[in-house]
Length: 292
Ligand code: UTP
Image (spheres, rainbow, N blue to C red):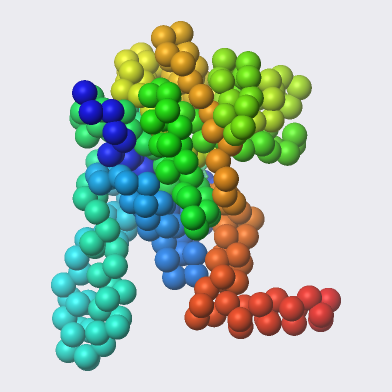
């Protein structure tokens, strides 16, 4: 079988309760980083890693994501009639990205359950997972590309990790490991959102995975875990009985856009690096700082 990673799954079916009230009407994955939706930045990372087919998992109330990646004929005609060709290019940017399809998770039973919805799309292959509300910035070597490089070395499940503050271990899946070399961890266990006292380390799984197809056998029989949800971490842990798993401390700055302060930091950092408004943004922040 061809073991190249060509497919990616982006789960984006969660309710986004941390971001109410906006998530009542707008998907958190559509929240703009200045003017680019979070999910577009994530799709671009997948494409840069060589992914050619993407499945986005949504729910019935998140049609804004589907609309964003579809053609908008009325808007196109309006811009064409006005001779606004430069804006037309922007409008079409999201449509030509790659082969993007959608499927529904009808009940929000957790991340593991969302991934299970991708079984037919994945169709026996190993695949990448990029969480729809996690942005990683690395201009030269995206996080997914880094994980695929390690997958190509070991041909097994690879978890994207970074160390987090002790106070934050209860927000993530945390790994235990037998060996750490370079940026690679040999994984021997993991636990979802442990208390600080019970955490085996402060090495957290942060929104990027390469999963072997065997994961589906475990997800199919996975019982609800932390928070009553079907946890992906629990099934990956079970997979350890059959396959090796490595984790990779990916290089790049990561933003949890599903968290208010994480989102705020992403906007500030992105604005500062933009060609169009970067200088103004910097001056503005300096001015606020001086006024304090
Ligand atoms: P989160 O853990 O951030 O959950 O999911 P959430 O429900 O969206 O947000 P909060 O915690 O209530 O604010 C991480 C990613 O997994 C997706 C989410 O859309 C998000 O991109 N997800 C989560 C699903 O697709 N389905 C689920 O049942 C849960």
